[in-house]
Length: 302
Ligand code: SIN
Image (tube, rainbow, N blue to C red; front, side, top):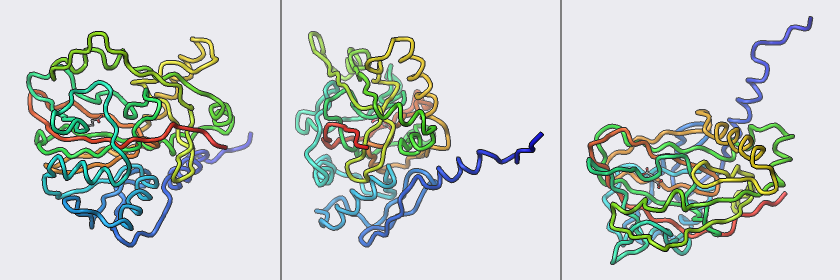
């Protein structure tokens, strides 16, 4: 009988993972990886002032390469400063269901406390993938952390796609899927004063594998919050395939788990990540501001 080395298969997986990030030299920012696969700490950016265009350019590149950018030791941004910084990357996206602040309707207040009955983003998702043109990226500053807990987990969807077999990749590249939101959004923001009686919630058909418009790389683009069915498959086939993909994408080796400190900022790329906000701090409070940047219609290009 032919002896197989114990590590067979493991090296391939390790190689795939270590290729997950593209190395680029930056001149206007300093970038330190948090894991080998996803996430960098970024220094050298002052979000309280207008940001020079070469730096905006590099931040956009870093976002596409590293999936999520973390900024420590930041001042607490005013709503306007956060909005102005986000607008460097495109017009802002309006959330279809969440409560809107009168003065700044683009701002989404993240606030969970002892009386909350639900936590925003508690299941794996890509922000608002049910919109025809889902947000390109999201900028979140947590002003007040619960002290411990309240981490956010991010997963790299390039790495999740790369780790599939060539056969399954080829099959998925031809697939589209339905993304729905009524089940996720109806009544969801009632505790923030939203009356959604009669509201129609968005649905969209998206490619199962999307090509990132900046990096040109392929990323898995289904998530368990919004993706309900693969088009042109029987219900049982679709359920089985989605169940596999939802399990696959949350493998720990694709992830980084971010421990917030007061005023930390995360800027993630919704085109190549998923995330989950951990609610393990009840009855304590966690408070922050989120703005999202409008994206394009997702597409697949061979
Ligand atoms: C979200 O899903 O946008 C919330 C993330 C978080 O609160 O950490």
